[in-house]
Length: 164
Image (cartoon, rainbow, N blue to C red):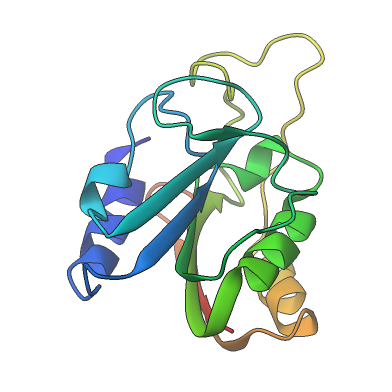
């Protein structure tokens, strides 16, 4: 994870109550993690591959939550999957009413990079930046409220916050 994305999560973590329950989609530590920023009472890390930071190996696009969480996180994942909008729906299903969904992803202008190690894309690996407009429309159409999207032109990143 690059520093600009981490800075977004640092800023958000400063206002988070540490007694909450958190679920993170795409939690495997490839090149940095946000887990230590959200040292909460319960933290569940979900990823499609095993590795550091992963508690449950499964596809977040089809995962059925067994609990309700206060906060859902997704950092630098959506550009690596065609199913990013389904992960947004999973986040919605996993949160309590009033819960918050925070995320970051590559957006317009960002160069492709691998989900495996952050380097060059491997043959057959999916990659597509997510536009601010697509993110905003997707979240609103799924029933999220107070949708905020922020485009960071310096690093071509998109950050978002939405409330269930």
